[in-house]
Image (cartoon, rainbow, N blue to C red; front, side, top):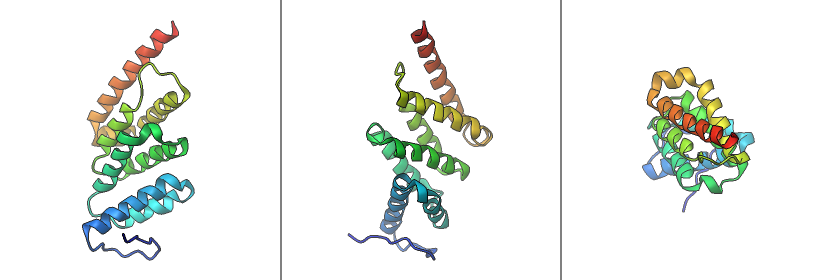
Length: 159
């Protein structure tokens, strides 16, 4: 299999769908595994996009849906970071990513990792409130339901 070497200056065209898929996979890998280069990697993605980040988001959703529990903490932190980036560019499919991230919150689980995810998602919703309210109000409704349910779990645990 061929590999794509990403070095500036970037070509502003990608010749075929397989190359575009490999490019998105490489960028995603770089963003998740190399946090110190994440901004550079994401800028490469911004330089070459043809589908409003739909493929990139579908790759992210797949990771969250299938692998989230197996990911190390640094990758989970990068998932939150890249989610914020994708909200900023109104990426196609951001609503699915947010829903799948919320599904990773386990009701009744008061472990540090679960509480960290709750905190990060609440912070994300607060920091991106205006954007989400304009673009994806249904996601906010879903988030509200999720967090009210978790609050009920927490209140019953506390007593």
